[in-house]
Amino acid sequence: MPLIITLVAIAVLRLALITKGHFWLQDELRYRYTWIFIRELASLHFIEALRQLFQFNLYARPGLVIFNLPPAILQVVFLILTGVKTETPLSLTIPSLIQVIASLMISWLIYRLALRYLKSRLLALMSVIIHGLLINTNLYLRHIVPYDTALLVYLWFLDMVLRNYRKASA
Image (tube, rainbow, N blue to C red; front, side):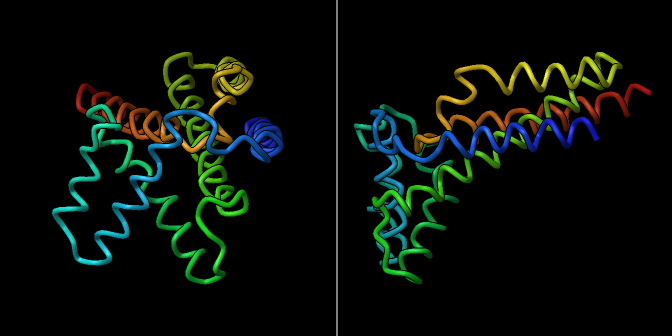
């Protein structure tokens, strides 16, 4: 129960932080390549779509486009259903909400990992609270960058590997 209350409190805090500030950081401008990637795929221009993964402005980071695909696809669906353009603040709330969900899942994984190795629910909960209150944990929530998504994938794989390692060594 304390974990649920903590996650709800963190979610409320993070939802309050995402109201403005979209498209301010340089990495966010690279988000546009994801929309171009989707447009080119939809037009069956596969070579041009792949070219978006390796744009010079991405500085050899094709993962930016790949990790931005889920929110960008939801934005395109939102555009088709409502006509709201992808770069409007209302549409940019979609990737921010996904960031909040990813950050809550990160908090849950931190709890799992901490509980596994600290063997204390209190210490695991404190780990989540400390992580949840870090400035850089909350900084990127309202920005369209896939850092939290990448961290979520890393922690998920780490949790899987460690869980399977413990089973294999038992």
